[in-house]
Image (cartoon, rainbow, N blue to C red; front, top):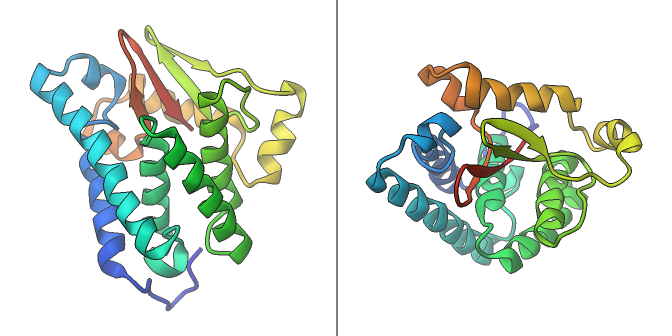
Length: 204
């Protein structure tokens, strides 16, 4: 957590990142049932935002490196992670962000849990089993976990990097996508990457 009484060095960048993720609740972070019912215009808006937000993050990291706690505060850094998870169309960029995030963790400027989520995302994209069980499909109305290396050790690995129990992540996805269609529920949206048909990838 950012130390009490301290402020991020670049509140303007923090506000931009946070505003982008808040706006994404209406597009690429919208619940599955909203995405499924979207008009062609809504689908295009989600596609455009899903590409524009990583481009904005690219500009930030080029100037400042990974936007960690000292630069943008806890909320800004978490918003940056959410956008990084969405950059599936540029996997080389995601891997670059993973390296930057690992360095931020070493400096104490990001959390190991943030790194673990992006690490899993990169593993899934490269065709390898994930390590921490953070990546899911929402496929035909069902939540499906991507393959995990050494499933018997998953609970310990999650605890070691500061991730909550897996059941909590699944419960969050279920509430967001299936259980509650109220506006308040959309504020807990997880990262989304559109796929063809009825399949979408999520992180929890």
